Length: 140
Image (cartoon, rainbow, N blue to C red):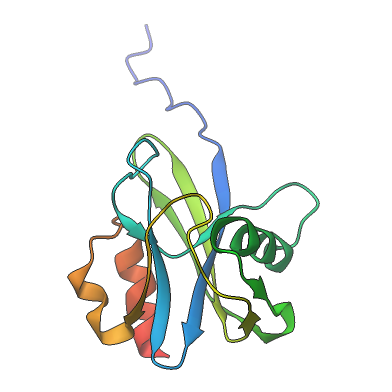
């Protein structure tokens, strides 16, 4: 009899485009709705990359849908990719700096948003994986 433990089922990795939208020395953050995964925590706007979309296209779409801004995809800069296992799901956070946009940011889904000085991000509670993203941002 084989006594080895069964392999863990293969978990689908969710590819997420993350936007660090910069405006001078501030960055845009939004609070996740309580009913969602990691609800109540602050995040950088973004969302799932759909089939057939580039990461930049997905990020531009998500920024328009979530916070009502039109990002200039030519002014996006790749910051980092980070795969993170939350236990109940695995995400690939494909993080981009957004240096130019038009429109006035607001929580289109009713979520609070804030423009925060990059040095004050530690005053907000983010999902665990974001600590690495914030560290990469500060290294820039």
